[in-house]
Image (cartoon, rainbow, N blue to C red; front, side, top):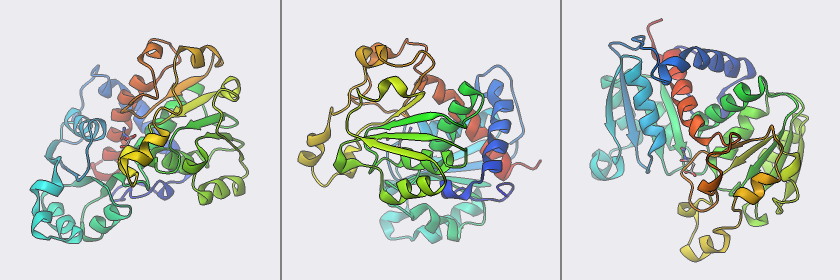
Length: 310
Ligand code: NCD
């Protein structure tokens, strides 16, 4: 059971009941995330954010969550340049040392499995804020929380994931979390070369879900209740030339929106490059800026659950 002292290294660490527990807690904290109420439940606690890879939202979101709960932060957004990694320190040692300062650690790194290595050394809970193309459990959680709130539940929905499903850690996390809810239909839209890893597809099917894969976004738009769009993950390709083959392959704009259901919700973890046109920002079905606030609430819930004195 996820709770006090737990790490969150992988989306696989969470059960159905854990998810509902986190969502209920996040729902209660939404007024604090929306700046309508104040809280001091993390007073006296310190969060360390260690980022070895670029971030705008995830780091600020965790830091905002901690500060608005009355806690404090120590932060390094350029660990690979300015920390003792430069001198050859191991992730294990970094984890051990930072855990002497902080009550909870949030870390992002370009290599799969690296957050787990740091957690080996840490004496306080460690939360994965993205490890390479592998996983991004807190983004997955805030996405699933957004769906849960919008539809009042998740069971039975038809969910489209669009973009770079091979390298995108966000769709990987979303699948791991969504699989706990019964009777879903997943529609994966990607170029064949960037399709969802086989083990995730197999896993969803064995859990009883329907999975459809296609390269053609237009042909499936009208049936989707959720569209989880993502960018082509430029930094994961071998070369710029390879990336250019896929750049701009799925652009979602007014024409696409016009073909969607009235009750569809459009999500995107951001940053967007060219795959999501600002012309649909004002459509009430576009939820990507609301997701940002939901993310603060979900991260507040996580910090509270793993590290508060309560
Ligand atoms: C995502 C990430 O870092 O994986 N961004 C985020 O955390 N909101 C998505 C992306 O970079 O495409």
